[in-house]
Length: 208
Image 1 (spheres, helix red, strand yellow):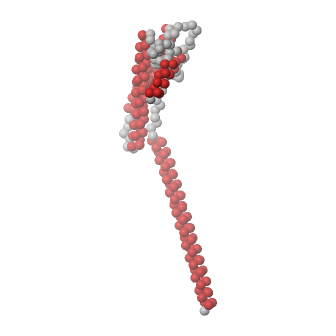
Image 2 (image 1 turned 60 degrees about the vertical axis):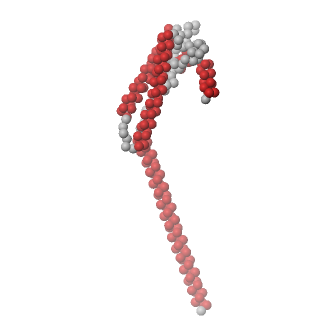
Image 3 (image 1 turned 90 degrees about the vertical axis):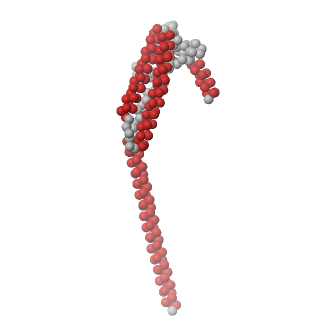
C-alpha cells in the first residue's frame, strides 16, 4: 500500500510539472506573439507617419522668395560712389547718383508688387485638402504683408526724390547735419544722421 501511494504521488507530481511546463510554454508563446504584434503595429505607424510627411512635403506649395526692403546696397547693378577729396557734399554728381539709386530701387519694388499680383492670380486655387488651403492662405498673407511694407517704402522713396528736387536731401531733419554718403547708400531713405537715429532708438526702447 505504501508503495502504491508513493507511485501515485510521483505520478501526480510529474503530471503537475508537465502541466506547469505546458502552461509556461503557452505563456511564452502568447508573450512572443503579443510582442511581435506590437512591433509590427509600431512599424506600420512609423511607415504611415513617414508616408504622410513625404506626401505633405510634396503637396506643400513652395513659398515665393520675397524681396528685401532694407536697401539696394547689395544689388548687382549697384556701384558705390567714389568720394573725391575736397568735393562738396551733395553736389550735382552725388545728387545724380542718389537719384539713380532711388529710381532703380523704386522700379525694383514696383516690379515685385506686380509679380506678387500675377503670382497670386496664377496660384489661387480651391484645394480640397484643408491643410493645403491653410498653407496657401498663410503664404499669401506673408506675401501681402511684405508688399504692404514695400508700398510704404515706395512712399518714402518718393519723399526722398522730392527732397532731392528741393535740395533738402542728405541732411538730418533734427540737427541739420550731413547724414553722410555711405549711410545714405546703405539706407537711401534715411532722414536722420547716425547720432540722432541712435538717440531716437534709445528713446523708443525706454518708452517701450
